[in-house]
Amino acid sequence: MATAALPHPTPSFLLAPPGVYRPQHDTRLLTRALCREGVAPGSEVLDLGTGTGALSVAAARLGARVTAVDISWRAVLTARLNALVARQHVVVHRGDLTDAVPGRAFDLVVSNPPYVPSPIDRLPRRGPARSWDAGRDGRALVDRICDDAPSALRAGGVLLLVHSGLCGTDATLERLERAGMKATVTDRVLIPLGPVLRSRLPWLRHEGLMAEENEEEVVVVRAEHA
Image (cartoon, rainbow, N blue to C red):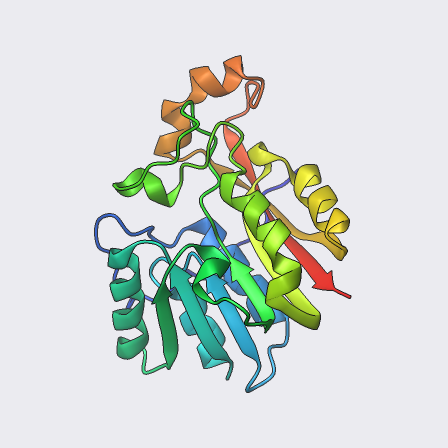
């Protein structure tokens, strides 16, 4: 499969201090999907695991009313500052995914969660690895988002979720379908392995998650709530 062309890099105004996930290929791919979604002015968007707030700022620029969530205080403060610098209104909460917005439903949920398979099952509670480690199968956060999406969306609402093919694209589609959502892959792109995956190549190959390839597939899954 040929590597797809990616959109232009995230605007340079975004601050990304140590410990906050710096926007990369997956962020830009999901931003492209968000812009393609045709977000109506005034629609309500939830950004789960906002990091720097890149997706939140993009949604706010489209006229959406944006709520962002991250479990890291450093990310929360960074997202608030980036929204301020961009002159966009984004409400940022500290919390654990949808637990931070109980009882609320949105028109669109976007998420670029941690999804990298790790030799350690336990999720890190601090440090930079909290931005990418997601258990041995990489699905600790992805599964929760799939399960919570129906209650976080209004009828006809849409989930846009980006993750690595290493943690199982079919598993995501099947889990969303079981949750009553219509799910498809809208984007696939091959990217060079980053430093984290390169450092784990022997383990990934031992686990059968990678063969001899030196690229990682990243996908955007779109799921619509009936």
